[in-house]
Image (cartoon, rainbow, N blue to C red):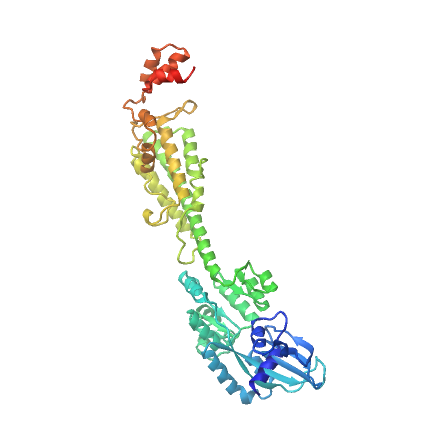
Length: 511
């Protein structure tokens, strides 16, 4: 049969409305798309389904003959024909030749329907030929798979195409060619796969070809039984059971309604590269959760153990109000966010491999860090600036490997500044708290606080850096004692203490 007739029969077995990619490609091969239904009367159309893997049309031609044409997977079309034993070898050779070039094959056949009813089985099928189709992967598919593999995500191809097509596609995408036919899942394939149990075969294989919907479902189920977190992408009705079974079902942008309803995530843009972004984002969130847990455990142990040791060794009476201040500075800073809350927005490096909750490791890390900080606090009780050189909000490696986010840094600086100012200047009578001044023993602010303090106005620092422990209070009281108690005398005293011109002040202001 000539090429034009094969294309015409395939076009007649295609939809004119709601076309898929294959229907569109075949109809566009005609000189005029209207030829697909020219001079015929359509009686019945059988749409594609994942079981039969073919479409068929029953029509009446211009001579009144009833004809049924079908296109689909070569194996399915070949099984319809009586002469399949004679032509199977030649057909498979052509299919393999196309597959080596990355081309899919589409079989075409027709039969006469002498009973002239759409339900009748009709006469013998005649194999017309094969149509090569080029279905290239998206331009970003190879890069997406490469990034997924680098992140420790195992990618497997599950396709209904022939095995040769699957291997060629896997080679182009860089995901491996260790693929098997669906018969291997049932132990029917007599090759190297027969020496492996089905569950191990599924784990080690790069993919499977010629699969049916039930095969996809079983593959997902077995991977889950092997304690794998399984994600599944799909677009068709035949993918819906596997999408529903998977831990994370992902329907692509142009998926059918059945696939969308069965999936957990529906992509709104073409391609799968967004999945890599989702993986990185989720791992960053997970890392922040681990940091939060480690921080909470370590800070709790540090405060409790540190206060206990200070109380037992030095009989240090720590005011409860100051415990509350420390808790507020550690857990919540009303000026910005909580120091502990900003961990949720801190910079983190996503794990290069799949991560999980290793509670023993996380708790042990928090205990070690918390104990270390508590012991350092006790050991360097008089040198506070050495106690917080190691922050548990960073990653579990060297502290200088990651730069903290601006929000976390601001919260940290504000918390340290407030704590330092309270230690220096606080006068809270009901809590029996009195500031110790800059010369007080045990108070040496950390570097961020030093930089901020040195940048304050000179008038503010003048009192802070006085050599007297009462930071100038006695001198001010002595000078005010010699003044009249009326308002004008008090204002004049303040002005002279500030080294201002009293005449200018009196001329500019009225008291």
